[in-house]
Image (cartoon, rainbow, N blue to C red; front, top):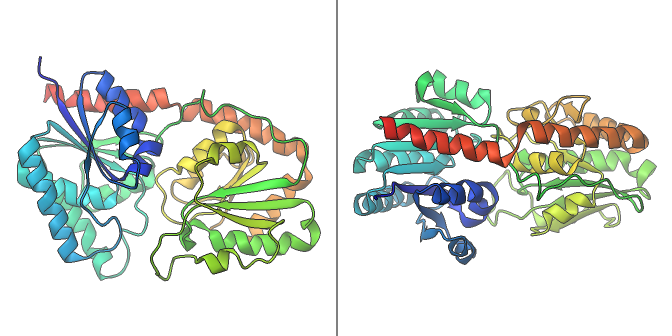
Length: 375
């Protein structure tokens, strides 16, 4: 019996393992012949040990270098022509664009495009204004399904006529194993730990956190510890936050940059409050899903994607973007009111159970793949 060949394309292997691993493994168990195409950041062997085939993705995940992008399209076109996958599942803005174009050129009939946040892709500059029309052209494949994590991204795609309504599917985030990320009561002793995890770029709200921490310092310098977890991008751009800035606060007992860590789960368990003041045009941030699952109140922005992880006043607070004063005010409430903080943490766990189960996310993906069998 022939198995359908499913190719899943993701920017890098680290992101695949944190956001798409469970779907790929479940698809393999369901009878699909799964190949993961992703940039090797040192985790390819981990993917192979899951029983999945993995190939190197030749693509620069950031920037818009025309020569590099042409090479990416050519590489994917040749790969698709050689391998002839039955379904191509694309994850991430650049992969969605160049992968769907290569699939169209190679005559691939079935394409799933996962929109995990638009970030800064659809901007107001020259390239940003052109990109929607490039997406419209590349997405013109025979059978297309586009997965959205929030209604705003779907509205943007419909506005630019990149997709039709009947091609849209909605899955609320990447899901989480609620047994693995079990509810954990907050620590009883030590400083109140305020956790943040993301890439160190300004749009994730790093500077907002630093400013709010300064506002609270005199009052809480002996009571709090802000922990910023995440790696630098490795390239110098106006929106990147440098190590010098992250280490400049001056009191490591009050605010500490941890760098990239593999023990985020343990850090969350050891925290009291999770903050995520992003204005990045998120899909549905996995870090907020994880914080909900372990039972931590969340302060995030009333912005695309972020607002879908918090019911204001129930499992945390929603604040305006770029508003350090609002962040400091909401933090003060949670710092001073232990009972409220813990109740919001219990509510966060309930919200995760109702919205972010990995089993539901897997089922929805398998249902989408199965749709192509009847077309």
